[in-house]
Length: 345
Image 1 (cartoon, rainbow, N blue to C red):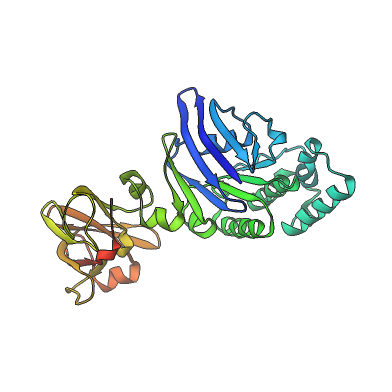
Image 2 (cartoon, helix red, strand yellow):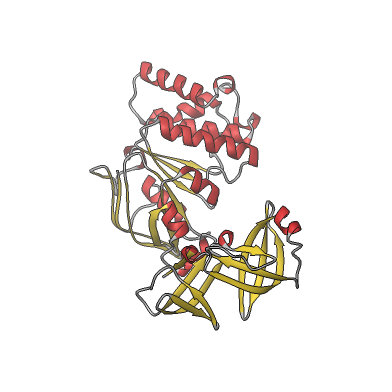
């Protein structure tokens, strides 16, 4: 559906370089990366709001690289809603029809569908200043879908919403994707959104693609140290490999299989590291005694830093586990993890 070939976009002080992506029809695809990586620039290049310096963009078999925005069959939804403050909900939703030749009967049918689908019928005479954040985002989605686009671009549509509204709109976006024929491409910083909504994703860094793959591949099998760090693999170590063992600062760790290379990195997700007061007799092939070097409150979880020799591991545990294990800075603890939990590259 969306094919991007060697796309380059040059702006003052920033460039997207050699972007190659293929997104299948009706996919829900996520773009992730740190601030300034180029995610919004890529969306706006797809929408025709920023010109491409080189490369090509296709929707299906149609080359849209040089087409104006209204000819691309692409709609975009921004995090700040971008509604017209002087127009009513109804007028905002139907605004895009000025640029598309749609008959009166069909436009009325689409409007009725959008109002019902997004629960906006009772709000259609209001102006944006009299709407909540969640309601504004629903209007923004309705306006984008009103023109029946082949591609819907979403630029962090949930980031400015309160947690309650965020879950409501996230579920609505999921349902909209299921019920529509559009291909969704969304920018987000929120891992929960990515895991809940998408099947595939790409990680951008400094204007270039670092990794493309399924959500599971990216979160469990990152292809670079940057991606491993970005997706929260806080246990990331430079390592030497010898057969099915690796050595980091003198600490020997058992791997699931022998790596192809002799040097590289290992990465372990913090939730895969188990803490205990006594050594565990289990299938976990790696178990070490250490000292708690720090405890950080992360809201629903606590991040516990455990020093083993020269190496500091990070583990995530619940508050009840923290209390049960009587964990505090300076206390002795055992940590264990499976060889299958180690990703090496």
